[in-house]
Length: 301
Image (cartoon, rainbow, N blue to C red; front, side, top):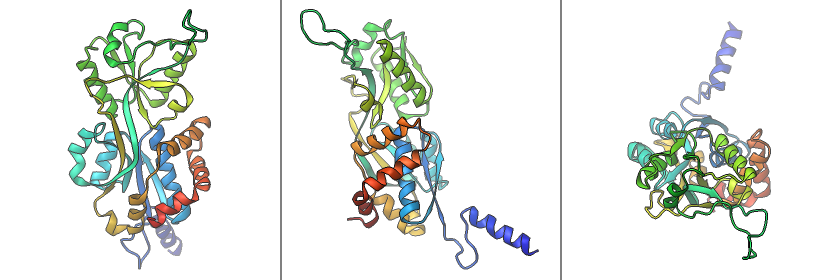
C-alpha cells in the first residue's frame, strides 16, 4: 500500500502537478514552437533561462504554426515566441487573437518574401571587370520571364506556415499560376538551396529573416511591388489568458524577453553547424556569453 501511494505521488509530480498543500500551483511551463530555425533557437533559449535561472521545468512542444496559435488560445500550452506579425500570421491573429495575450515583439526587423541566391560567378565578366550574380532578376514580377530556368517551381516549407499562404497569393497576383509551390520541411528547402548554389542553378525559395542561411550564403529578397509580403515586421510573444495570475514570475520573464536579429542569428548558426543535434546546449552557450542580457530579462531593467 505504501509503495502504491508513493508511486501515485511520484506520478502526479512528474506530470507537473503538486502534492497536498500546494494544490493548483503549476510547476512546469509549456512553450509551443515550430520546426523553424528561429523558433527552435528562441524556444531553447527561453527554456534555458527558465531552468537555469528560475529553477522551473520548461517543456517544449513542437507543432505547426496554426496549432501554436490554437494551443495558446485553448490553454493547452502556456506561451509561444513565434508569432510573425503584423503580416505573416495575420489570418491566425484574426482567428485566435481575442483568446490570447499579446506581450508584443520579442524581435524586430523580421521579414518574409521570395529569395534567390546573390552568388557571384567564379570568373570575371568580360569587359566590365566585375563579377555578376548568376541569377539576374531583382523582382518577383520577373520570375515568370525565366520560368524554364526555375523549372516552374518555388521551393517552400510546410503548408501550414503563413509564408506559404502569402506565397500562394503572390503567385496569383504576379501571374505565376503555371508554377508549383513545393511543400516540405525547412531542411528540405535549405538542402535544395545548397544544391542549387553549388551547381549554380536557378532557384527561388520562401525565405525569411532571421535565418542562418543569410549568414551562410549571399541571398537577396526579390522586390515585391505589389506588397504581398508586407515589408518588415516583428516576432511576438503570446501567452494564454490567466498566465499572469497563475505564474507571475514566468509571465514577467516572457514579458521582458527581447533580443536582436544578430543574436538569434548566432544561436541559429551554432545549432545548424551541429546539424541541430543539441540546440539546448547552444542556447546555454549564448546565455553564458551574454549574462547581462539574461539578467535584464529577469529583472526587467
